[in-house]
Length: 77
Image 1 (cartoon, rainbow, N blue to C red):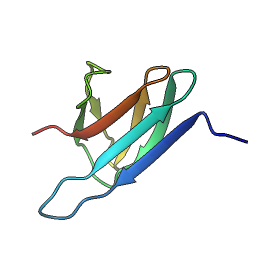
Image 2: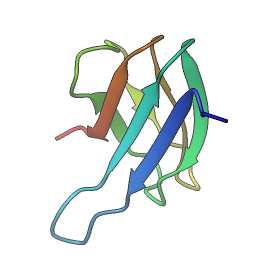
Image 3: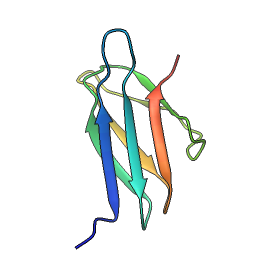
Image 4: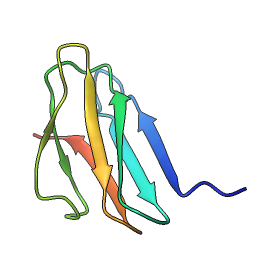
């Protein structure tokens, strides 16, 4: 059995930001991820998503990627 999507979280350190990677082999995917970074704005470095995502007060954000694509979400500088 093969998964049609994959989500990876790299938390980062105090000196370096983390990232959220979302990959889809099929349909577009959206998923809830706890980044542990409250009220943080994320952007997709790949350009596959023009919108920004803001995590809530607990660090949870709704991250997505288009069908058959990869999105690499990082905190906005």
